[in-house]
Each structure stands twice: as C-alpha cells, then as structure tokens.
Length: 123
Image 1 (tube, rainbow, N blue to C red):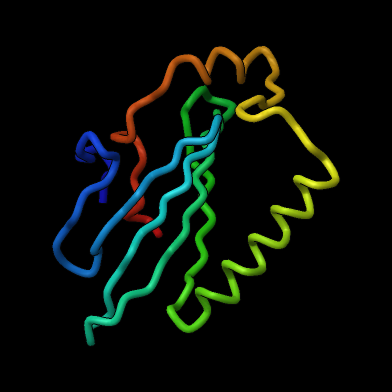
Image 2 (cartoon, helix red, strand yellow):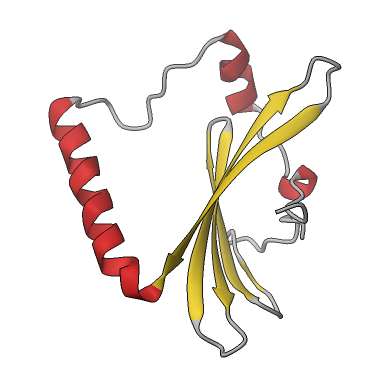
C-alpha cells in the first residue's frame, strides 16, 4: 500500500479492509492514523509511526512502529493520552510549532518529501 494518492484534505477513502487514512507529518516522522475494518465490518484504528533514516550505503530506510487500538479502548486511551499531554504542557511549556533541530534536520524540514516512497506492504 502506498500513501501517494491522498486528496487535498490529506486523506483518502479506500476499499478493502482500509477504510480511512490520515497522515500527519511531524519533522522527520510521519504518523499514519488508519481506520480498518474486520471481516465483520467492525472498525479499529492502527497508529503507525514512520521515521526515515539513512543507511551507511546512502539508502533511505523507514523504521516503523505500529499499535492497534480497538473501539472498546478508545475512551481510556484518549483520556490517558490527554492526561499525559497536559502533564507535559504544564511542566515543560514550550512555544507552539518550535522544534529544536540540528543542521541536517533543519534543511529536511523545509523540503517536504512526497509520501510515495513509504511502502507499508512489509507490515
């Protein structure tokens, strides 16, 4: 599956077990929020973090981490996430949209790359 055919709103409805996807670019990482359907047409969410890195031979590879979140856990997950986010914001306030970046990260953040080079067939 390639994330190259997103419409202007940043998401696309698809057939099969993939119902809806929303990519969120955040510096060197991209987070994919994917709604999927079971064979019984029940929905669940997968959250995938993808981080691009360079191999020693110069090739780009992607480190991917995925979690599955089921409907019965949505409220507890959202509550826990909100509690932790509030904790961090209260104790470590930062200016919005400001991320520390090294020299390599700064140039990468100004030149976005397309989603077409992210292949999740391996997952």
